[in-house]
Image 1 (cartoon, protein in one colour):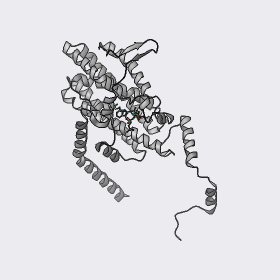
Image 2: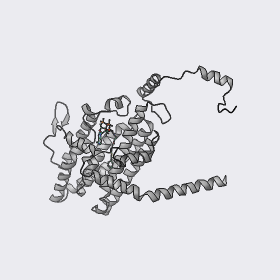
Image 3: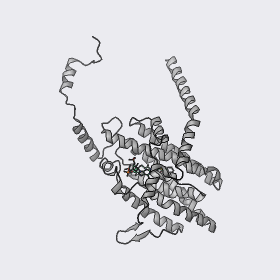
Image 4: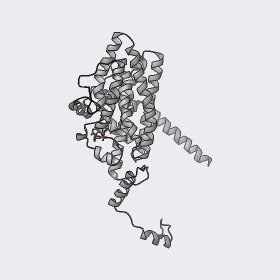
Length: 333
Ligand code: BYC
């Protein structure tokens, strides 16, 4: 009789004695590895919910990188000098690279890039709220570098120690590049603050519009964060949304003061806590933007869908070429 089981009788007897762990035992052993700060790798056992939340967060992160290219990409031709154009082009290309690392890392969990992109384009998957705000001046491009990339670094440095190995490793390179982005943005603003009154007003106006949305990048308050407690137990997140938001405010306010920006009245140093207080954010606005009501939401998705449709022939040509190469290799063997 035909059989695919090629084990000897001895091996079969040995295997029969092996005890298959129950789901509970598997999850306990998994949590013990997390508690011991071990990295979880793609072929290791992981609970379905761990896999699911990682695909959710990593794909949302990847989508944010490629949607984030759109507001800045629109300014490449309008950058004020050749130097600024070159720097901005490099930054926008870096964001594409970040998307690539993140989609690749997420694919190791068994969801294809095509599937993740379909979820973005059908409106099922989220991307960061910040990219649904309009970029109306050159100062906005610099403010995005300073505040948006600055907030991203604050969030992503702890992700370099995330329990899922491929995500943690992707974050190390991303953070190095984001820190260049943050500095180029701040440098652009410093330059403008040395300029005319109109340039200074442009910087102030830009800060006033982007400061609050940049604080919303850290997600809802801890009390409303559905995923935080489990994701912290799994060491995907190392700090809560509110902790990271506070860390970002504390680092950013002295930088704003150095620039000569007038701060919102809610922002005040608290001598007791040794932190800057900043009052309550407009959480109704946050949830409305999360649900797709942002000023630029439909533009962003139209641009993404157009890019996918326009690039179809390139993907088909690349696939046909790769197939031709494989056939040539097979023929030569
Ligand atoms: N925007 O339970 P919570 C960049 C959703 S891009 C939209 O706290 P979690 C850059 C959340 O998904 C940087 N949605 O969630 C690129 C959840 O909804 P679902 C992007 C948000 O996951 C180009 C619900 O609200 N960085 O650097 O524990 C140019 C409840 O939230 C947002 C990342 O993506 C938001 N802001 O924590 C320049 C970092 N916040 O999924 C720069 C990786 C929350 O249940 N992501 N939601 O339907 C994270 O660290 C976490 O996912 C978050 C949220 C802190 C964002």
